[in-house]
Image 1: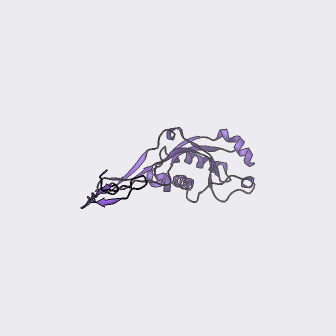
Image 2 (image 1 turned 45 degrees about the vertical axis):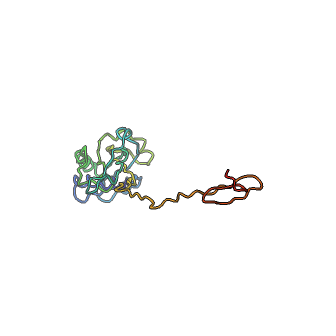
Image 3 (image 1 turned 120 degrees about the horizontal axis):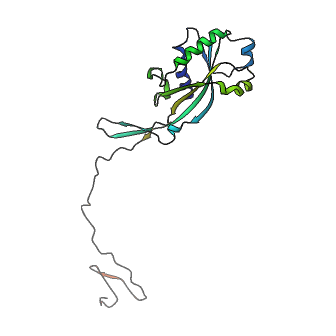
Length: 213
């Protein structure tokens, strides 16, 4: 799912930057400053993932019905998460980098258009909030790279449920059967005590001597 989100953001960026600009998702390294990078690069580092407040309370359901209108499948759309990306531009020239950053400020719509959505993120769509990357100075230092002008993107997307809930088929008919013959014969019951002999006369059990009990 995150790969689909990356591909969606890449599609958004590529439509706003000059042809030949690359989009990457790697952690910047000191060598990027020493040797530079090949060609203009928009780099987007995924820093953190957390459940978004709007998605914590409920999971909307998608339903699928057959030709008769019967509900045959119900799928939870999933939970919303917020993905924070740190976006920087690498060209070797500050003027060009600032121009690209300016283009990126206008590139991210509040709601990403559906034709740009890739794979699993089509289920709930993608929302983008652009913020300042100034609070991430410690992050740059941890990478061993000098802090530079950048953007912080909060990208809100829904993580879908892996398997839909298959509903059992409705009962259309119930077949009932009645036995044609019922055995009503009485079954002889053994009598306790010694000296008893079971003799069957019709369906009556008698003790010795023929006296009926």
